[in-house]
Length: 283
Image: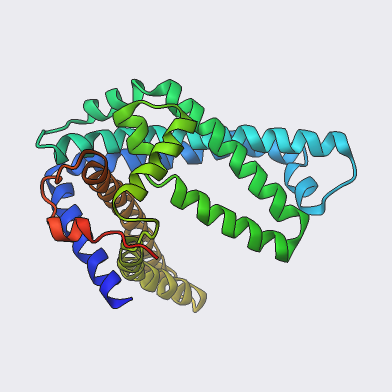
């Protein structure tokens, strides 16, 4: 475990070096987050008006209402996944250019994403379908359904680990991208993504720097020290947003680097060959 955390830490540090050269990459997760909030807001009214959340949670017998609920939720999933995949594609497009020795711009990222709109839409459709299926499984039984949905969701995440770089670089459709993602993973390292342990741990530690002042601020506000508490809460929120943006960008950079190595037998610029080769290990 400590070896995995150490490897993830070193991979993250090298990804930070890449991000320092292209700080504008942070714009993509920022725009993605803002867009997702707008999507959520645009669906909030119809979701509540249709009784979607209540219908699914309470498993109502009204077939018509349940159907409307699932359709609305499916549309929400589709639009949300489309937005996320679009901006991830733009970020990965820039990362690939940098890791192959180029000097990307924001417009390069948007061009990469715009040129793959059909593939992105197809992938959003597949992702929304899988998301709805997992939600249906979860709603059937609270305990068993959650466990099954969680395991299937984890397997799906591993299987689709390289889908975005495959979409961006190779321009394959959603089904072919999943197959290619699995092939890329198995080709070199197997199925265990050990680098995620270290990266997740590093992200958790960084998040603490925002959680601690946030909690402290809430406590102070509760005790009557509103001004100081509000300042701490604001600092905590800003730190957490910054950590989320940075971790998202770093994760995409690392995925792009590993994809380049696995799919093209090319060592990405700025990454240590030993760390990249050891990023995955078979179970």
